[in-house]
Length: 394
Image 1 (spheres, rainbow, N blue to C red):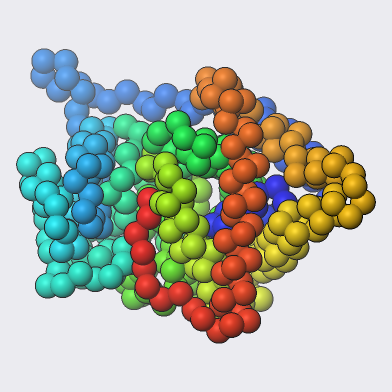
Image 2: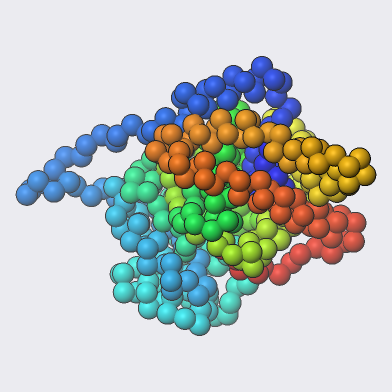
């Protein structure tokens, strides 16, 4: 299990590739895909030598429930974009803190539903009805954008077949065990697997923390559905089933806040794991007609199940029964396969030290991921207890 169960089983599993393809793609990842982004063209200066600020016909929707501590940085990152959106809308989903006050102090539009919508998807869809621009971005209230992120995402939507585009995701803070594990998870996924998926023109998820959509096509899908706990996965797969395209632009970077404690992590992994199982159950018939995706999802689900059982049950039991602690090396047997794309991404970002120091946390996190995935699969598929209540957890 290179990735572990959890949200990224659906993002990253492509081990139907043969060994030659795997080596080729690893090599391309190391020497091409993860190279630093080239500088953007300079803009014509205004009077006084200041660069002109361009705008794009984009409305940014930021769903926010009690996000006063992170919302300000998110909005400021939008205001500092090399190409700014036409409108920034914060959906204050009946917060009990100063979320609305923070947003208004930075000059953005604030709307408030009559009652709490119950989920991020609900808040985003509430705002979608009032969007008048041809493009709309969904951005989490705890996610900062790199200064050129929007500018780098926009060209992908020049193709009318493209319904959504997403970029590279990295944690905003990397300090605790869980943040470090997620940092490696993201470096691995977005430096290698997501770029493999882009080569096949099938990114498995247009990331929920930051994605840019064509408004008309998003409305055709009814916005962000609340029928699963992973609305971004649901929407992406619905686009594919409708014959539309989704793109991944690695040069466009965003930085969400990731769980710093096990309590927050548990809420997030519970939601993500149930969401993945729910989407597989919901979309499996439709996915049969989607090239590449049907295999990627099938392998992801199978691999997540088998690998989680192996990590959580088979390996420790065999080590005890056979009195062979060497069997526990199975937990880290794939270190080289993980390390190559991680180091490729880290070298490009000049973060090799951080990556090496964080690597052990990845193996802890993916074992935890496996537990949450197996519990979600058991509840959803065996016990018939589907998770329907959205519980916030960064």
